[in-house]
Length: 391
Image (cartoon, rainbow, N blue to C red; front, side, top):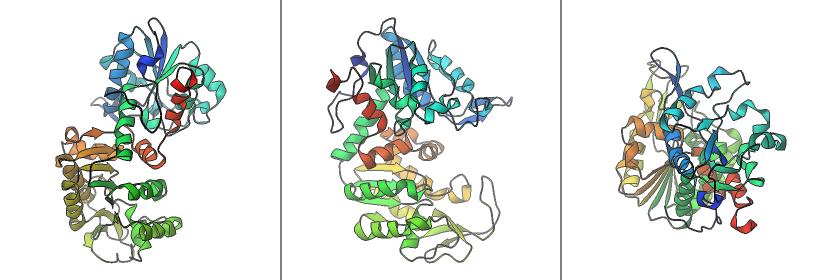
């Protein structure tokens, strides 16, 4: 991807590190990958996508003569003895894909990581000559390993991080139109800001997933026992009043009272509703009419942004909406950007992950970027000792 100056300001790239031949370079990667079990019951990496996206940076540094050491978090460890968050499975994959690159222990084993403790930054960077941020998916957090090293070390954006910035900057600056955004997932509080931002720049913002029910409740529609954030109802109502581009589900699939939803579950009754949900019923997917309408919007789009599932797609009964959106996004002739682990998994399950134009490594980070126009990790790089404005 060509180097460019964007409205975000200049980011130092690998070539701006200077001569790293024989030097030790610390690379902050986002190896927070899903884990599973093999036939012998051993913990293994279930999806190596995030590891593979870091390879161009790691290989480039090796070709420049650097000794490369990666660091990453994995999961939410309760302590340094948490075996479920040990880096060993990731280390095995990295050794196979990029021999000679080291990987430190889970950063979140250190309390100073989340606390952005300067003392931890000193320990982390000791013995290193340069730093590279190749963790776009973590760059919306002001963690020690993200914002600390650029304060003292020559620093650069990794190849993939730079590409993420270029792609998302284009959405902010001048997307081909019609520009259609599809947002799903559960936590309305995390996404109200980006819905508001996208409503100003996109031609249509299609809202699905559990977050849709807070918006539906704001319109006065009965939502039964669906997931709703009562503290955000007024915010949703104000947003709907000010933004005509937001489109909500016209019909939903719901599960009968008291029944559980889970992979393989057949418990309870599933029904479609176009009006109010009866008491106790829980909406868990967009309905067929809405899914078809959303798909038509995507087929006519010139630019697509999709982040978040349309329903509880881990339960096959409520996977239809997400799959319809995934196939429409993948088969559209539009430039399509997809972010978020669940969205990526839906694409993979449909066999069409390779059909989208760009699969982002960071769901939360991409939304934060679109909402705020910057990220703490990017700002830190722009203030590194070797950055243009610091010389």
